[in-house]
Image (tube, rainbow, N blue to C red; front, side, top):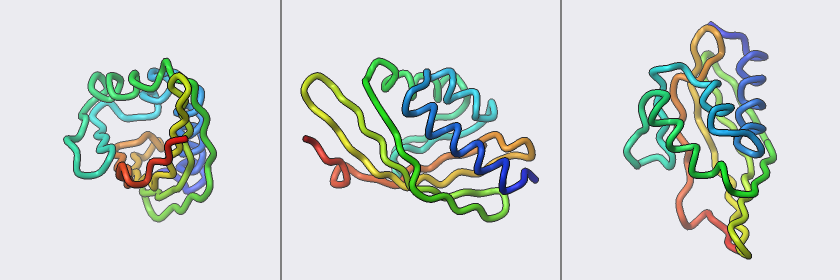
Length: 123
């Protein structure tokens, strides 16, 4: 099992990559057979190709992130963070809570993002 410190490091890299990296930067943190359910209740994206396509949607946007809290238990982590994206004159702010599981190398095996459209602040 990965150490809590290694899992926290992966979470930090993930939040940084979502905020300023490429889809490839984010996907590199996932195991090949990983799943992404973002938001929870939607059809999961399975495997690197599908996960890459999912993250490519934010790649051209101006964005930033801020990590608030990380809790690690066993091979899982729950964390809250803020992601701000800008599209034209509009700014979208979202504070999701993500739950991830990790393999022995601290690569992400699953990610579930808890948020809904009601949580999105447009301004």
